[in-house]
Length: 91
Image (cartoon, rainbow, N blue to C red; front, top):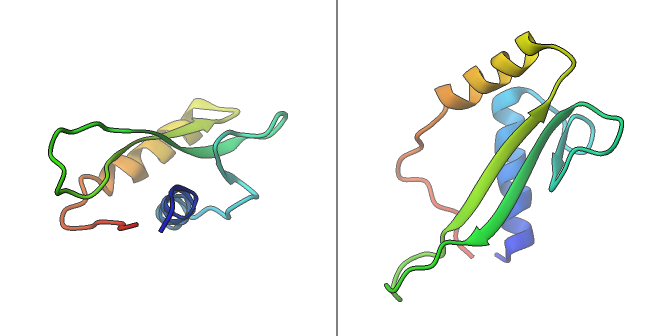
């Protein structure tokens, strides 16, 4: 699995948690101009001197909403689903 597939998988995971539709109200990389919703951004790889471990990346999930209540609902749903234990996406 390459980095693009990892980002797609994480976007689908977040969409399922939040009840959103990919490419309609949840996006990979950024929220398109003029839209509201959520973006899943897979960032840089986290460096480690340990060579025998799965690759690890920084991940951001951001939201842009018209009102504060919607933003808090998104935050609550996500924080209620974390931390996730014993789940890995391998490439």
